Length: 376
Ligand code: ASP
Image (cartoon, rainbow, N blue to C red; front, side):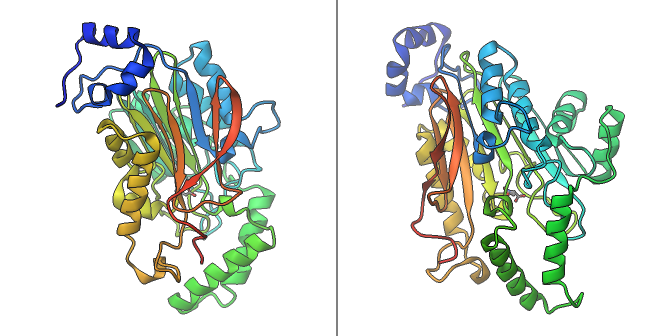
């Protein structure tokens, strides 16, 4: 039976330590808006692997920067956004912000959202052109407007009015060259039978990965970063250039609350990278947070969402030879006790996620739902 926590019960629970809290998950994670989080948690930041890969010429990665801010006592969301800004600004990461792989017309269009657990506020932008750091514009939407999501030209106009620099083109030489190569290979005649075109596109993507022209993590690539402070304040942010070569105007899961990111300040946070359409059909970040509210551990809640995606993937074009989903999708999860998980539909030796806590920053393996590879 679920029992509500009053302040006195909660103090007793805290005093008995986190072990006691773990023994009463329903008490801490029951339904309802009046839940309270433990007073003292070991802070942690988790993110997709690029959060501990890129430094934009500096000395620290995203998760190191975010963790440092959180333990210093800075606002958790500000700390996470300072972290992802490193990846957004680094031209070497071709899946996020400046230098992100462009859409089919060669235009870089960016999506982002952020969510502040304690403040219960969120903001997002989609199809934003010309601003290197869409996560900051998402935060401006959260703080300066009554809205959650602003898209396209409206998002750019909003950003300009908020004082952001608008650039004519966020391509780097590298992202433009890779797009040109894709165009040359997939559209030599301008018009192809759509089915043939899909086959050609899949083949070309595989070739370009094998030839080392495209990082397989950056076709679907994004950064999601979630953190919790010692006071139990939980926030998250997701930012991306979306699916490489997407149809102009396509919006993925990243800026959509409940899909690319969801935070409940009393329960936990979840965010995603990978095939956005599969996530959008199932709103997995919301589902994961709700799973944790019911008492599931982060890993189990993540696996539940992956199983839902698997069950809802029935179109033949999305299935491999084994009848399993032929795409990758990952979730990064923390709960209000500071426990974490990184799970994916598939994994391999190279698929990792980033963690930073009192033991330092590291990459940990993604735990897979299914064996083998998406393409098998
Ligand atoms: N999920 C993102 C999207 O579908 C892309 C990604 O993570 O690679 O836009």
